[in-house]
Image 1 (cartoon, rainbow, N blue to C red):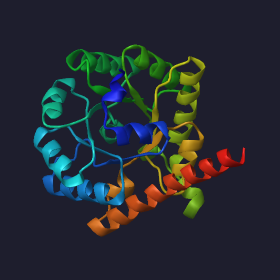
Image 2 (cartoon, helix red, strand yellow; image 1 turned 60 degrees about the vertical axis):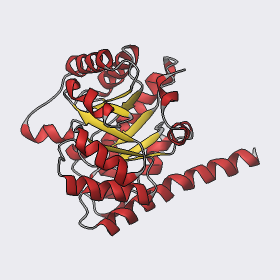
Image 3 (cartoon, rainbow, N blue to C red; image 1 turned 180 degrees about the horizontal axis):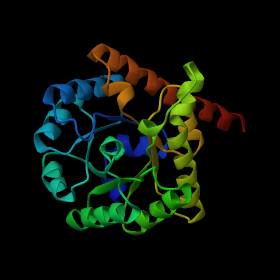
Image 4 (tube, rainbow, N blue to C red; image 1 turned 90 degrees about the vertical axis):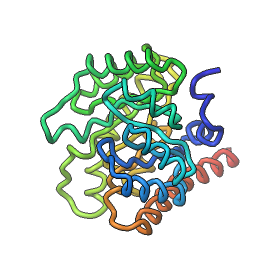
Length: 262
């Protein structure tokens, strides 16, 4: 049995069907009120997974509010064990976007070291790692391969917060997502060419417009942060999550129709 097979069956199916929807509350968001609202909206909106800051009390709150599996994110592996004891199903190194405005950048060697330490601490728990988009695309792909060889189960991309779209409307949304889409394609291609069957989650800067693009360039699912967690009301959050859910489900429907025709 692989570590991914220890996840809830519904989560396994969403990964296999390339329809995973993960809502991200924020690596540095330790506000119980905010995490509660986002967690509840994620569950009611139809998300498959919730990604929160690595704090045991927040995990307990999020599990209860969302009724879906919880992933905890941190750059400090020592924090993971207690969060897992509190109910987290997945541990994640990253997302690094929130550190860049303060001038904190993560090298490939540092990310790999954090992953190795996390795997040592929790050898049986599903481990996801974000690949820093500040690296050249070929270096991102190589880091993904190195991470998988070290025991990482999921690879996540990023890039939205450092993207500066210049166009309005739909074109601007595509420009916003272009860094993470490019990373997803480069990494998923490298993994396939190396015969690594490891899921890739495309995250950061996505919207209803670009979620289908993420799947088309090789992602098994998407991670949505600011498009949800920056909204002011729970109702708006639920509506946004449902819209994203529908965008992913429409892709499944199209795929099913195409297979039946063929």
